Image (cartoon, rainbow, N blue to C red; front, side, top):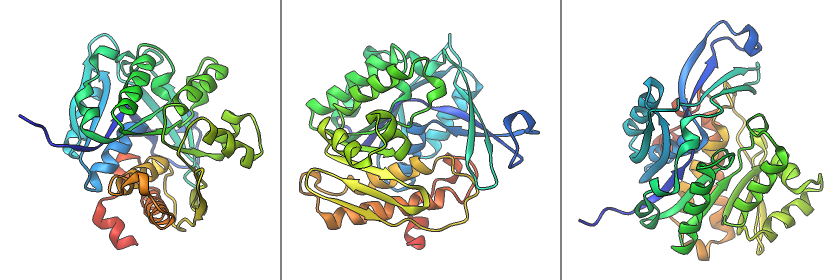
Amino acid sequence: MKKDPLDVVCLGEALIDFVSEKRNVSLEDAPGFLKAAGGAPANVSVGLARLGKRVAFIGKVGDDCFGRFLAKTLCNNGVDISNLLFNKKHKTRLAFVSLSREGERDFEFYGENSADTKIKKDEIDASLIKRSKILHFGSISLISNPSRDATLMTAKIAKDESVLVSFDPNLRPSLWGNLRDARLQILNALKLSDIVKMNIEEIEFITESCDIKKGVKFILEQGVGLLVITRGRKGCEFFSNKTEGRVDGFDVMAEDTTGAGDGFVAGMLAEISEIPYDNITDKDLHRVFRFANAVAALTVTKYGAIPALPYKDEVASFL
């Protein structure tokens, strides 16, 4: 029986965010934490599903209470979890997060040898990629093997099948034992990517330059077709070999910036999935990034990542 096509497949880590109940305190002084499903690719998958897209998630979690909670969360939000695997030997990754008054975050990760790093090449369901328009992934699955090889193989399958490849480095320096390796692996991913979202710090890290114009040129020279640089409430800038532009953000009261970038990516990919990408116009791109900025803005008005991601009708009302 032929299966329905997908808009996006997200590959990578699903984890638990424990967010401090009290703001403007260090993790050391946090009195307690609220549990929330998280992990950048998992957040993006839920964000897309809430925006009405057909989306699947590929990854591995521990066969523990947290892994089952993540599976239930994804499933309840309409994400296809047929390739979400459970590992009996390794636990689900955990992240503890404290927030400043402005909603900025401080992270502490637990799970150096966590289940998400254990997905293997032969465990990837390639049929999900082949019936999708877009594959999206981040850099955390590139930190170590076997997930590194599985991720790069999946991106190559997507390229071979003319599936758009979206990459968000989502750099977390504390998770990498060697930052030179982080740069190398991110560069390897860029060479397989069509659409890349970065912030200024990531551009400077990857290109080893504070000159943003040179940085943009360097990224595009890796074969990237569309680069978007996010600037928080200031919006974003986009660049390709044919065009460039800027789209203003929205000024909202930020409660928690956790998941803002993932909300942005979900909004961006939701809109791009509806456009013939090979013929995308400046007008299309401005519409895409206005929508993505709106999703990100709504995401920061609530606590947590997945719990804060908006539904399609909320974005429509906001705009």
